[in-house]
Amino acid sequence: MMDIRLSTLEDWLSYLEKLHPKTIDMGLERVKKVRDTLGLKPEFPVITVAGTNGKGSVCTMLESILNHASYRVGCYTSPHLLRYNERIRISQREISDEALCEVFAEIEAARELTHTTLTYFEFGTLAAMLLFLRSRIDVAILEVGLGGRLDAVNVFDADCAILTSIDLDHMEYLGTTREAIGQEKIGIFRENRPAICAEPEIPGSLYKKMLATNANLYCIGEAFSYVADNQQWCYRGISGHRQNLPLPALKGRYQLQNASAVLAALETLEETLPVPMDAVRRGLVDTALPGRFQMISARPIIILDVAHNPAAARKLSASLESMPVKGCTYAVAGMLGDKDMTGTLGALKKNIDYWLIARLDVARGASEDEMMQALKEAGIEQKDILYTFQNVWSAYVYARDHAGDNDRICVFGSFYTVSSVMRGLEGLHS
Image 1 (tube, rainbow, N blue to C red):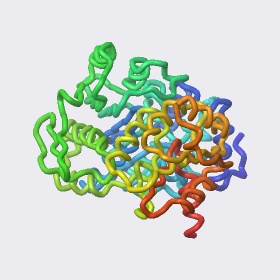
Image 2: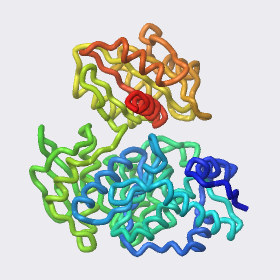
Image 3: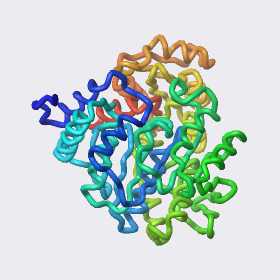
Image 4: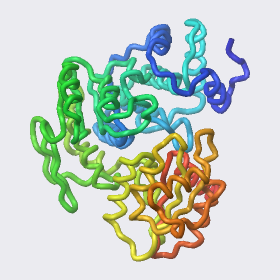
């Protein structure tokens, strides 16, 4: 039975981390049992977002635009950077500790009643939907945690599904090819409901499987597209074009691919959720997403980016190239050992002058030796590696102390890497 001492959010999260023997346990049967016991049946539109990269950006842009259109928006994303509360927002406000503890207790009671177990992520997914129902929201945005077909959010049918990208990540769970990974992600598609695909290079056999879902499929480059200018962009949509749109506040030209998927999704939901163009414009420029090419200093330039796989690293590389600096670029890098470290680090080797390698203080964190081996395999020379550090904050402090005004510091490799710096900075300012 539940431990009655679970009175704080910290207690609950510690309990949830140990509740299930596996951190990730793919499958929907356990979640469905608890969902049905709680009677979680959303009557508002649900937008579900899957993809290797870009999910957070799409969710946040959708949330901002719909909020500016005066809808009461529930948004569920993961992972968090500083606080668990970041994962569940209503009207762009994080859920309180008290509200989370209350619904966790209800879910725990339902879980015990069904004699089943739930993972940390599954528990959070049910908590988000329970809070959304209680708060009588107008629309829910759900970010897939891993894959799609067997992810916990997929127990709630998507009224509109968005697939942002398909690349190699989480291969131990999803498969070793883009086609296999894509097949897991299109599991969120629903028959006769819109499915937006922003991946421009779909494997041919996967495209046939997308069509076989009988979803109303809209692919970038076919049903919708975009054209970029220096200061504006044009959206060529499913039913019409939008000219002279402001560039998204989220940096990186690849964000236009995400933004166009957002506009395509809103087009398909126009009858249910009409959105005026003013809300689109205001929402694009009012979007904030920490850790996605986030610049926190100008002299020296300091960039935080959660890029943790080769595809994301290539986009980070392109963004760095688009804004060259007069001085040197220092990398503060820490990664999880189960990621493609060689491919990720190698994608950035032409952008980095000096590497500062740090151990991540988590169970899956790569050691300094493992990171050094990955750098070597990526063709990065020993002379370019300044030091290794026991933690990310020490590496960041070294970079900050040695970088000149014309230099640049890029912190990347994992959500844990970025959050370590953010926590350190928060401590300095508290």
